[in-house]
Image (tube, rainbow, N blue to C red; front, side, top):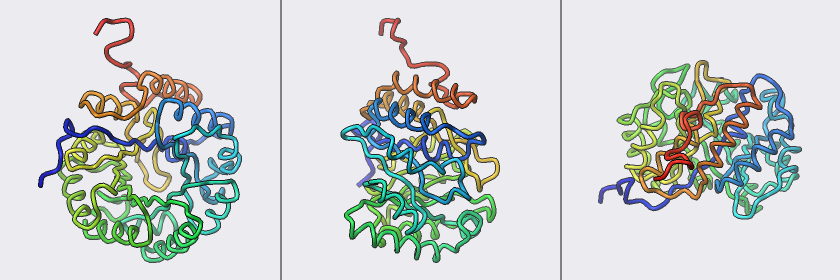
Length: 310
């Protein structure tokens, strides 16, 4: 049975990663109040998942040193999930002390990237994740798993698809309910993205897969479209295209949430997201950060404009 075409699908769930993945690499300190306001404004746009922050060591990601204050300060919206990223049991304990109800864990398909990113091999990282997921299972906390460098690594180059499959399968075995496959440095093309997805989907049901594309080489939207054609129905994105990777030189931001929603609206796929409101959030946070808006739709606006008859 072939995968459904995008037009045949009725809904895609967008996981907004801007407040965490988008802000973690910003060079200048961002006020805690601005982070809280960003999360609340994104949730008000109808985004079902807004990844709030990360309970990593402030030594490694100083921008997110205020994780506890940010999470505690959010006015939680009914129906919105606010997961946080945790690297280990210590991070998990800090998160749970703040009342966090869902978490994400992370590793990579590249040995070299793992060494640079978390100073551990893939297998060592899986042991750390196991320790977290065991605690989460006992507490009834759902866990999402991130796999980085699924289409290429800045240190080792090509990443065998078999390694991506192995890591994704291992995360499912450890209890992750969903696996986000990340093109961390934005080297993928639709053909390569399809091949990777098909290989992973042979081991992990496509219903449990999400995609996470950076737009370093302008291929992110094309890769999202190809993933939709392969049956993927969960897409990670970052408002205003915020983001980058502190351990991947040259990597630019994630695919912009505004651009993804515009694409999906054009395909007739529901997201539940108010695009006009989201555009305003993207423009606001870009001004707050003093940086150009990375979303093409954010810069150009929705179509047709509200003052033009459709």
